[in-house]
Image 1 (cartoon, rainbow, N blue to C red):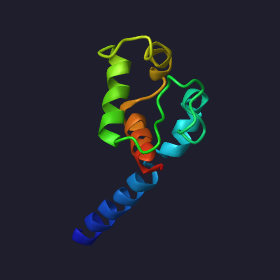
Image 2: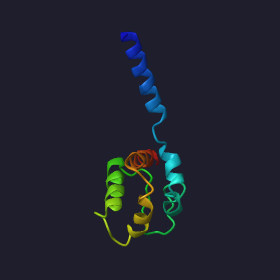
Image 3: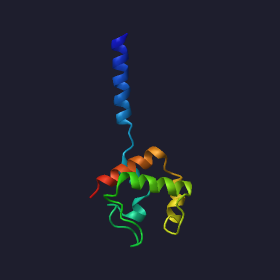
Image 4: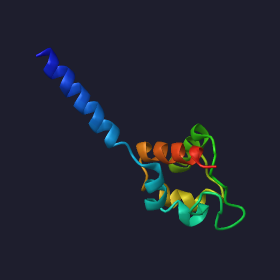
Length: 102
């Protein structure tokens, strides 16, 4: 019985690791690239932020604030319309991916 539980726990952990959201794919699929650039360094207009290398916690907080309306200004208006497409796990994956870009 104990071996079965250990094996089941191991398989569950492996499945969870495989199912982790892919930040790079989400950045593309959720259309982030259309304003912030395919490389996250070349925004559509100079006033949009370059996101590559951004601190993951900061980026995640900004996305959450825009989604909830806590951050609401001219810069965030365009993102407000997109953020309903992104859940918390996806935001975290995108933020972590952005932090790794240089």
